[in-house]
Length: 399
Image (tube, rainbow, N blue to C red; front, side):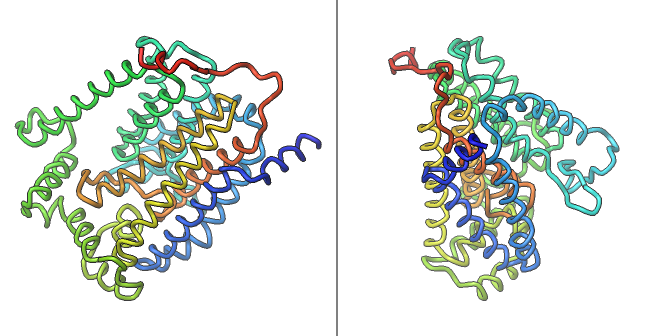
């Protein structure tokens, strides 16, 4: 009882987790209004079902002690990986093929669940659990296990295929390793190799014959259409470039203050923007609220990410600290990719805007992150806790 009361007092004490919650709620409310601009029925479901459900799950995440969360992390990782394997099994029951992907499980009479959303949360927790007291990752060989923890779920998600979700894992791994004190020369060497690999893939998509292609045909076309749009070439605007072209058009038309709800509804509907209530919701926001709305959304994401990082900085528990850094990196990367593809800076990858896009699985997963951040931020360090990774000599990170 005393421990429960102490936990409750810690949660109610002002901390950065409350700021993260406020930003997440504001983004969610903006999302409900933006979805209502184009799909009122989906907006009602998002606001009356998925958001309350996400908040209830978030409250549950406030209860367990971080030590208990750490103990169940590896079993949860195994469970999630088994579900991801099930998704790619040929003819698996309750697994519909939606837009060519097997990324969902239909729960009869309930909802359609996207396990890769939960995989993002469990991946961060498992990575933090592994790194919490180790220093082996400060060698190049020691980075192998963290990369394996990332590699397995990424490969399973790519098999669905879901390139957008898979892209979130590597930047998150990089951020967590930096926070844990991995040597930057090792990380930047690996980052350079990854950048070179991406450049090779893009070059192959643009100039290599079909027999040498690595990506699927629709993925190749999206990269080619993005480059063509950036060069002013409009030959793909009625094909693979249609979605991105319409998004950029709607954003450019929004001006400073936007058109308001009624006129934006007409404009977005007339332009026939695909996936306007989930993947492409940012174009709806800017068209309705203009550049001011775009800045407000980006500002809320900055507040959210900074508050989560402040919660990480306050924590002396290495598991909690690294988990918070991972959650901040995951949310920041996802928002950046989604906004970047709206602006023509990145190819369309089918990735949602956190807290804003329509979808129960995504909303619940992101509020699980917020609940865990609030949980970690409210805990006082144990009196006899084991020392965590601490590198007082900053030069050691660069060696």
